[in-house]
Image 1 (cartoon, rainbow, N blue to C red):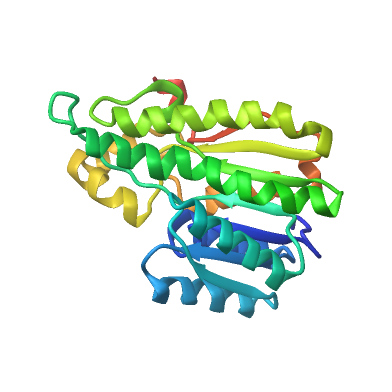
Image 2 (tube, rainbow, N blue to C red):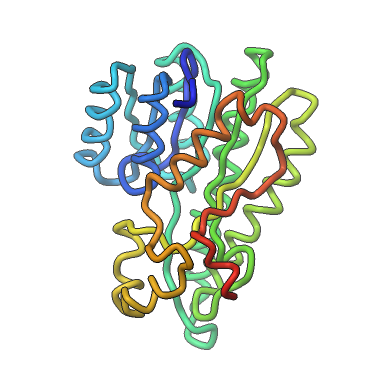
Length: 252
């Protein structure tokens, strides 16, 4: 098992899906974990209980990632409650589609605000904590294979995710002197609440047929990559996108 003993990790959007899986896996690896949620306090509390069942400290706070004041205060409060901050995971995001001719400016701006601007705001708020401690840190951003190759009807989503990758690479260069590593994890279709509707619309069997490994991704698959990047096993890894797609890219 990867060792995160003594680490303090904050997960933006850790109440369910991939964020929850990462929170619980990090706790089982020895980390104390803070997490934010937007609306579902009950789901966040379930995650907190699972963290505590792993014998680690949990901290839960409500915040909208697209609000600079809210996400900044949430990260500050988490760092205070956990005694510092060693890692940040940005899991919060939305996945909505619209043909370009039907897409409204409001739709486009909402996707960018949550998926891309929110990523910037979270990283901006976390970096001072890493610098204050003087021992570096690790940032993991959840992008998507859509951000690597584009996606019809989901152009706003794909653009926001591609933007995350370029932001990650820029931050990896900018923050390297502070020993702050910044990486992305890019999942393909993953069996979460957010993906369930679109997958069912396409057809679950059709989606699964696109994976050489013969199944959809599970939240734990992405969580495993996340915990690796948070750990010292990845201490010389920065500016990279770790694709977790079951070999899907090999089929185009």
